[in-house]
Length: 287
Image (cartoon, rainbow, N blue to C red; front, side):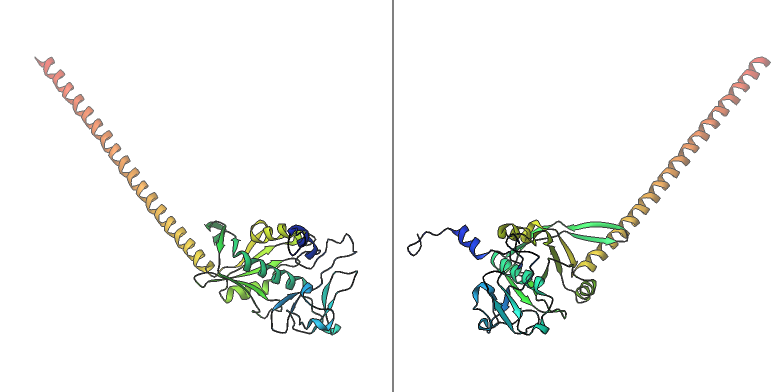
């Protein structure tokens, strides 16, 4: 009992999460795909879910992406969501904004994440530098960087190193941003949650974010170093193998030369023996 009534955590969670964290609904009671914004920036800059604010302009929120004024639409039929007060200012970043804000909240609470394996490359050759493993971190925050409208999820490790986490719900990170990440020396991964767009199973989606969903490096701050070290190792291996092959050829040639020398000595010994036998035979005949 809690304050005089029964409390069932899973039932309460279900009431709070009729839609999934990305703002998508399972659509059994609706038609069509909903990708409405479900997070807004409060007057003090805090992130607020649609369930935490009043209706209409009373919400006092702005868009986390474009920072335009929002209104909270909380009618009895459609999924509760934010809309831009100025319809002409509506941006197209709702899905990614929802995903990144939700992911930041989960990661800030759990403080661990499976990071994909690191692979060094040299031409067509590859080598695994580090296996996929779970990393712990001390902070998760949202930052706008690289000219992006959608705030990135930034994980901060105990040693101060940072990892950017992109959550893919619709489109993959474009090559322009990937190149910018590489040029600026940022480490970033992308987690593919497209298969969970329609899911209302919050536990399953969180599990996918933390470890279950496919993930890949968009940029690794140490990739150039790993590739160079791999290239240097390949060059050293090739040099060592060349020296070993040369030594093997030298030893083979030496062994063959000695074998030839022994064979020649045997022939000479046989010839000497034969000549001695002939002389003894001639002496015997003279006697």
